[in-house]
Image 1 (cartoon, rainbow, N blue to C red):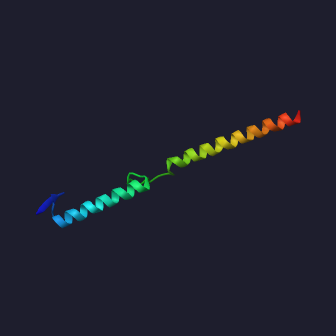
Image 2 (image 1 turned 180 degrees about the horizontal axis):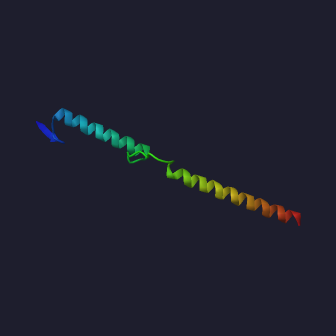
Image 3 (image 1 turned 180 degrees about the vertical axis):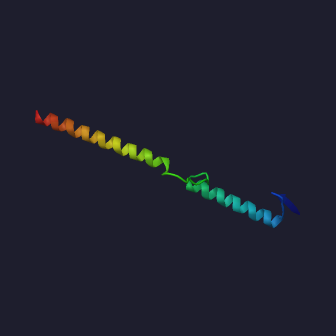
Length: 74
């Protein structure tokens, strides 16, 4: 039996191989955490949030140290 996929006739064996390859690609994309569409420009958005979190943490640490120093000074 042959199936017509995208204008090309495939045998059952070929259709099974195509489906297996699609499933493998889908599983790889799922495990990688992406949609399979690669970003071509810039860094991943989560790195921006990591940078903002680090900057906010550093700012809070400096403010806390300043408050402690002011309290100890008098």
